[in-house]
Length: 237
Length: 263
Image (tube, rainbow over all chains, first blue to last red; front, side, top):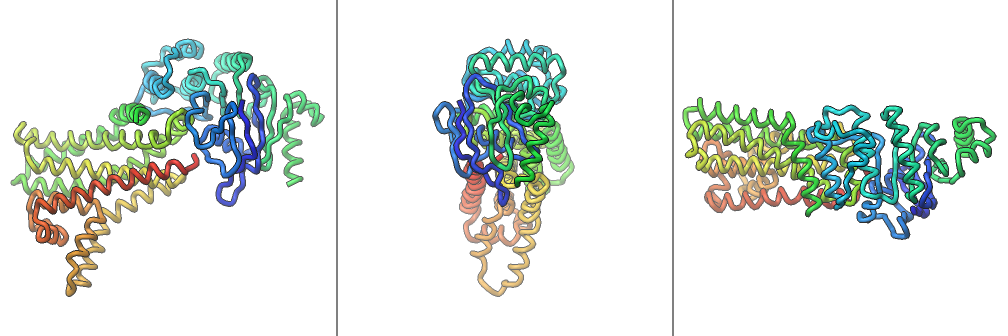
């Protein structure tokens, strides 16, 4: 479970997060949505310890995470753009992550699931963006993470891998993992999310499922519902 | 320390196989071979090599260090999400870069000595001094470039500042010193000159190498002052200590800075 308590973050004059309060339960998939520059990446990076919040706290299963490192062994992260050192092989990258995680888990199941076997010995520089994204997915989903944070995970994946990936994520959610997804692909958001978090003007609000949101905004699609919310927030600001 | 080694290990494998490191090796082997083979005396060849080392090593360590930092940033972000200390990530990457550069540079220089004099060439005190200076400059300038890059999110700014530091320390600093010495030539400024030369790692390496070669003509003002004040041995001890400090300071600053930065 992730608890975010009154989180504030300012970059010079720009206050990106203005007291974000969230409680993300285990066994649910949360999608974080908001217009460009609303602070989605900052919030994700705060949870991951990449950005240091000015005030507030982040608790992972009750323990504070701000300024700590250990909790990250329970977190899997798939960044928007997968990039690895170009002159090493996929095997070498996976082996390093395994050593960092101090894990004996065999990631063979995920390697087979994402069909990366034939690329294991290839240099990163020779791989396509889609294959790199698959490697990134393997890293994020390996070593039994309790919390999985996915930033535009399906971008660059081919349709069949996208399908496999989404099914796997749904399975992990049923196992009790907490999953936080940031995506502009609204069909993915609709399909995967149990709850939608809207981030606007540095504040967050949990809006329920995609269906709830559409009903609330009296909109036939999620796209229209979100546009209405963003426009209303603009007027309020 | 273990985590640092895990990051170091992968980064080193990546860098040692990179094209830039190979070109760096080829450049130094060509320079070392041609100067030692076609120069009349070893002294002259070493002085020419020294000039190449004190300009090229800091330049490449600075620019490549900075470019490498920015190019690895997305991978670094992925590492930041792993259960590993920030200092282990950055020091691991930095040590890998410095070591890859040192190995490439050293093999290139050694090759020239090896071809000229066979294995006896490896016992040359000049070779030892060249290697130590090159290694120290690689460590110092890659550290400085990492520190500057860490403090500047803008790639263009970071690389420009790094280049500027190289320009000042490798080229402009000596010019400023010379002007200062000429302006105050009537005053006893020897001690000031000693202190000022210790503030520039490129100068320290140059003096150190000149003391080794014992070339008065090439020693310059600060080198001559060093020799008259301390003699060769004490002079070298002081320059070596100053170099160690120059290595430690940017690395310590990196450890401090990386804990406070947002990525």
